[in-house]
Amino acid sequence: MESYSAASLASASHLIMSRARFSLLNNVMAEEELPGVLILDIGGTHGVLEDLAALLKKHFHLITMKEFLGNREEMSKKIQSVFVFECRPTIDRELLESLPNLKVIGNSGVGVDHLDLKMISSFGVKVTNTPHAVADPTADIGMALMLASARRLVEGCQVAVSPDTKYFAVDWLGVEVTRATLGIIGMGSIGYKVAQRARAFNMKILYHNRNRRRKEEEEAVGAHYCAKMEDLLQQSDFVMLVVNLTPETHKLIGKKELGLMKPTATLINISRGAVIDQEALVEALQNKVIRAAALDVTYPEPLPRDHPLLNLNNVIITPHIGTATVQAIRMMAEEAIANILAVLNGQPIPSEVFPK
Ligand SMILES: O=C(O)C(=O)CO
Image (spheres, protein in one colour):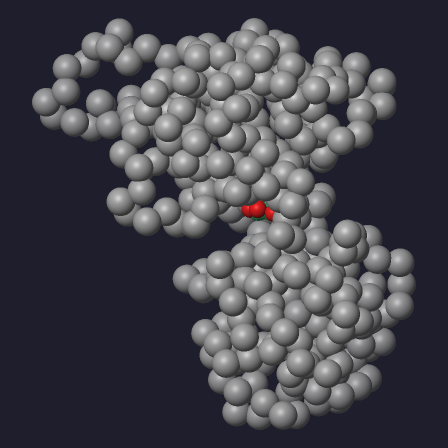
């Protein structure tokens, strides 16, 4: 995980000065009086940042990191908020100490496991996230992984492009998603969107969640509540993980849980890598304890090139692309900006995250 200490800020690409709340007042304030937003990106995303910049420029005055570093003392006093791009860069104490007027960290993405909420809160700084923007694209990736793994799409592509492979699909038969049983672990907004999509495939839907959904919500997608996760694991053909990473969900799926799954079942993870005990998963896949896994998240990300998960033909891995769409990046930015502005303007905050 990237860590943006004050020293490593040189690698972040932009410092953004917020003019949003003042543009609403016809830009009556001089730029140098405006509150600042520091953007932390994950690197290698310049095209995306250009689009983001265009969006932000409608309300914000952008200042490059070079300018920030050239005038650090003055700039750090102006920064009232940090925009964390794509859930991954973390923020350390040293950075917080260097931003005396910081009021809010606007996370672009829903998961905030990369942020030390207690530590941040001890500085009197609020944290917000973007649950609405992420739900549809992340649910789509869950479905895409489930279908791709079920129908062995990646292997199929390899067969199609390989000049010497014999073209007998019968050698690599898949399984059907239609009418199969899907067990969703974590029925928040993303899990629910997955259930809506799975209904169109006539899947039987089971779910396990801390809190049971309302009866009308269950009925709308035909989902059945499993109070015990074990029941869901035993009955499902596909198990999809959609929980937040917390101390309670760390390694939620280990050897015992994998052992409860059907040998024909597939595990899909669109939450965080550490929700699965990865060593136990490798063993289960090697020994065919379960049929396959399809993972958008791992630990670390990316996996080292010699990691055993990369050498198994019953695994599909994508590089954490749940929200990697043109639309989602934009919607997350809009949601994060709305959160940041609400904090700066002392208005009700749409999506604040609290330390437990
Ligand atoms: O929103 C999140 O938490 C993500 O992981 C985005 O990919």
